[in-house]
Length: 565
Image (cartoon, rainbow, N blue to C red; front, side, top):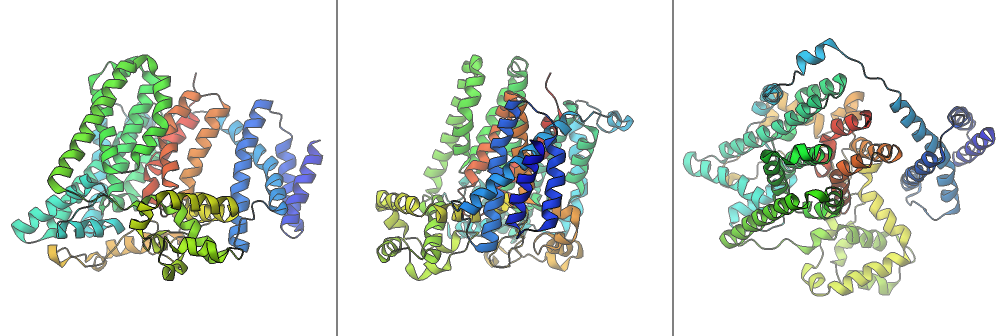
């Protein structure tokens, strides 16, 4: 039976590669080896479900990059998906078996380097921050992300919007305006802002290393994480980039660790007032520093509340405190600064990309359907559709008309979606390709998509902010490495800078926990899963949107390797 299944899998995969004999032989050898292992039915069924979705993703992106469409309902594509599924199923089962057989090794240096004390977190924090200092100085006064330029313009005009979290805009606003007023240079204020941000970011990473140490994680994992935070070029650059996502990621990571501790230790955790205060503080800051955090909360909180229902009174106190603080802060900002609501188009990236792709690629689209799409968009710009980013078309949306005719817009989206489902799926997959396709190329040659945005435009004369970091050799090297993609020349950096790696680590964790029946661990990673779900509806797939998931990779790996008793 195993030989027959191996033969069938090999034939299907070789047929998909024009009867390539090498593919046939390699697939047959691999599948013959994997299929000889015996597993229980439950494990096979669960693995098959995960394998089917992985096969679906693999085949869809192969088709999209080769023929320009996923052809997901095509017979050949369906056969390909089915052909890949058994092989991926047994690869997943083998990975789980391999992980279970990993034995923990002990090193003499472990207790010396990661000695748990009351102040061990400060030791990791100082180590991280000291190694960042040369980079921080070389990039003076700091780095602007794509969003920061718009926030600075709001500050100068005195007209604020909630497009970006107001708390972050004001946090950026205050030091720049103060130093511009006192010493005539906004650069000093920006530098102060980013020094505070770098401190918070470094503390969150130190907290993670300290947590791994206290949980007796693998020495190699702890050491690798600490060294990565200290010396991998991306971390100090992120620390001094003016963007809400860095601070949000720090707060969300700390919140997630506190939730994990609550789920794991329960009575011991809830009896300490400092833990309750930490939950309230980090949840509040996470909600204030990114607008879509609320949706992630709404998705994962019901499950955690149900699991911890015996602590419902304490949970109510936590929620009430968070609600009052967030509402109070936002109300105060509304009264004092009177920000305009953010544009409705920011929530419509998925339908925008779908309609843009439909308008430009679907041959069967009728003139009447084109007219309906044109009623919501500036038709001369509909041809500016880009596969990987929604901004070119989204920015041409008649937002007032969409708002006043929302039911009509929603009806059009669903009507066209049911009629052209493949185009809908393709538009979603292409917008989020960076998250799923390990071979997606960054930086993008067609649109502005990079690993990390290091903008060097000197457009802010009103605050005397000047970016001259390219004149510095160290900063220039980091700029070339991260912004222009020189990291692709270094195999190790190319791997660890691959955004999809961290999504697949999260997916692997979910698979491992379900197959092992470690459902409490599934609850622990729900904050990361639900956050990822929310960013799938975003305008583009970039690292800073999923930064909390990437930062949590050492934590996820520890949870995968650590077996519950």
